[in-house]
Image (tube, rainbow, N blue to C red; front, side, top):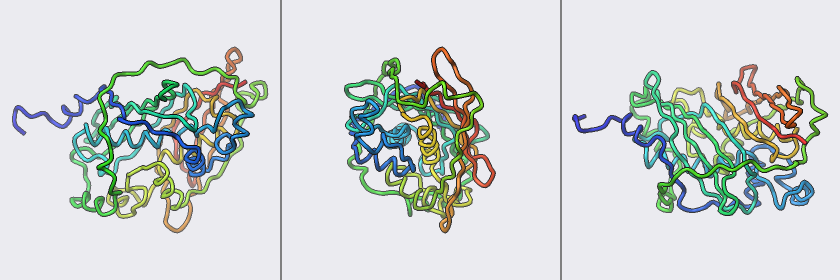
Length: 339
C-alpha cells in the first residue's frame, strides 16, 4: 500500500453513517405473507385468514414481525457488496445480534422501501464486527419499523482456507444480478409515533410478573433451512452447503439466525394475540443451531413475563431458546402493549 492509499478500515469508516435506499419498492403479496408465516411455523390466523384479520380490526393480512428479513437481507447484501470493500458474503459471516423497533405493522399490499446504513464498524482480534441499520418505509404510511443487525466476519486475515472463495463459488446462488438496481444515496427518514390500538391481545389483568409462557419445541430440518433460503432470499451458503460451513470452521450447516428468531416471534405472538401490540424485540445469538442432513434439530422456546407497568399496560417479556440443553439465544426481550 502506498502512502496515498487508504486502508480497508479507512475505506469502511467513510461509509459509516451514510444512508442508502432501494431504487424500487417491494410489494407485499398476501400469498407471500402466508408463505413466510409457513416458513416460520407461525399459525397465527392474522397471517392466514382475512376474516380473522378483519375481526381483529385490520383491513388485510398482517405480516409476521420479522418479514422485513426478505427485503432487509437483500438491501443489506447490496450495501455490503456496493460500498464495503472485500467479499463479506463469501467470508462465512454470521449474525450475532438483532433488534427491532415496531412503529406500524407491515400488511399485505404494502409497497416498501428500505433505507440501509452501516451504523458501526470495528475490528476485534482481527475479526470484522458490523452493525447495519434497516428502516422500512411504506409509500403512503411512512416508516413502519427499524431494525439493527450485527454481523461478525473473519476480517482481512481471515484464517480461512486458501481455496475458500472457490468452495463458495461452486455452490452460491447465481443469476439475477443484471436486474438489481443499485442503491441510491438518501437521508434519514422522520420517525413517527407508534400506532395506538387497542389491539386484540391477552388482557393485561390476566398477567402476573413471573408468569411462564407455555414452552414450545420446534423441529428444524435441513428442508426447513433450505425452504427459508428460498422464501427470504438469504444468499449465505453456510445455510445449505456442508462444504462451505466446514471450511468456515462450523460443524455443519447452520439454521439462519432470523429463522430461529422469526419462529420465536411467532411463539410470542401466539400467546399475546395481535402482532401489532409489539413495540420492540431484541435477541443476541450465542450458539449456532446446527442442522444435520439426516435428522432435525429440536429447539425449545421458553418465555416469562419479566415486568408489568399498570399505568401504560405494557409488559416486558424475556424469552430464550435452547438446543440439547445449550442456549441458542443470550438475553432476549420484547416489549408489548396489552389491552
